[in-house]
Structures are given as structure tokens and as C-alpha cells.
Image 1 (cartoon, rainbow, N blue to C red):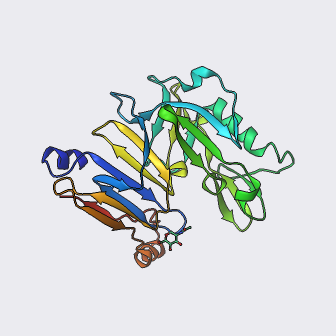
Image 2: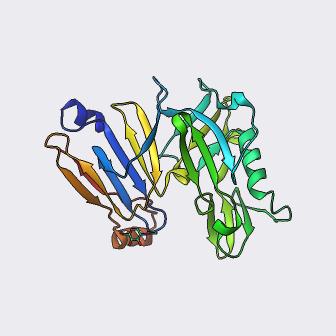
Image 3: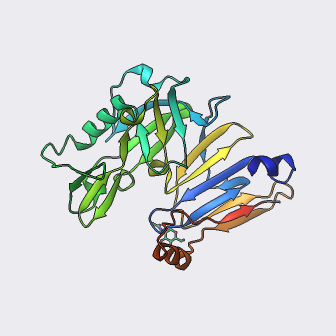
Length: 251
Ligand SMILES: *[C@@H]1O[C@H](CO)[C@@H](O)[C@H](O)[C@H]1NC(C)=O
């Protein structure tokens, strides 16, 4: 759709999303985002997906010691930003190192398996008990992932881990980072295909952003929308509505 709009001269090849997992709803816009300011990292050229260069992983303020070739890019290596993936898949060595670092303070924590997820009991806010995970990218772009992002509450006081061991899934020797909505939510994520960069910033997806009309230069405020009642009706009908987005197209 973006390519067709761009080909017809209607819109520039820039779009952004903000997926709100706190209140539901969020934003989707096509056009130049003026506010918030978003820091970016270059896209790896000529890839079928949105590939970027990861440089390091930090947990609780400490950089993890990992094999350097883990961050190579290539056919079966590298990092893909994919809003179409719900969770996030890490190469086995990175998965193990991150899990160790997150849970090292709780050696006695009892995990159990719930439909393939590792779950445990915890009372109180997970943000107080567990560390932040930060992915570092080329051009010093950071991706902050908070405990409430990577630990989801399954029942009262039962939390499950969202990180997935990609080593268990890959059948073809792929050893990639596949970063999905688990880490992309509650951020404004900007895809600037004109400049071949992608970036993000922590953001309240229930608030508004400012975008500029490419032709007139006028700046518009776009509010988030949360079609709560519509979402509820669909859920009662048996389907899960994950995202309700506002679509705004700048002419
Ligand atoms: C996010 O923005 C909405 C709308 O302006 C506001 O009601 C809400 O309090 C904000 N949330 C936070 C955590 O600041």
C-alpha cells in the first residue's frame, strides 16, 4: 500500500506505528513524523525484511559477554524487526545469556511449563523485581525492553516469559534475532524507507503525535484511537482483536 501511494505521488515512503499494550489501541500513520523526535539506525540494504545491525545486549546495566559473530549479518544471521511477529525469537546463545542475567537474582524461582511458556509465581510489580533489557544498534540506537514488556501476566500473580529460544524453532540453521511486538509495543516505531533507516522511541501510544503534510508543510496532530466497545464485541464473538489502529494518510 505504501509503495502504491508513493508511486502515485500521494505519500512519501515513511510510516510509523505505536502499539499500545497498556490501554489497547494505538496509532498508525503514513507521512513525516515531526514529534516525537525519533533516533534511527540504518536498514541493511537489499534484504527482504527490515534488517538492522545489532551491536550488543545489556541486562540490568551490564553488557552481556557474547560471541562477536553472533551479531554478524548475512543470509542466516542478523536482526529482523517484524511487527507481524507477536513475540521475539533469539539465537540460543543469546536466549540463554539473557535468561541467566534476568533470573540470576532468583536462583530458587520455580518455573513450570504452561502451553510451551515458562511461567512462575511473583507478587508485586515485575518492574520492581526484574531488570531492563536493552538492545544496542548501529548509530547508538537503543531499544529498551521493560519487565512488563517481556513478562506477561497469565493469571493473578502468575507471569510467563515472552522471550523465545529461536534455536528450538529453526530447522534450516538460521541463527537470527526476530524482534516482534513483544519489544516494539509502547514505542513509536518509524520506518523511513526514503532514507533507508528505522527507529523508535519510548512513547505513550494513548497520546498523540504530530505529522507534516508533504505538500503544504502544514503540521497536524493525530490522536490515538481506542475502539474499546468494538474490540469487546469482537472478543465476545470468539476472535481476539489484537490491534485497533488509526489510519491517517497525508495527501
Ligand atoms: C498517556 O496519554 C493519555 C492521553 O493523553 C493519558 O490519559 C495517560 O495518562 C497517559 N499515560 C501515561 C502513563 O502518562
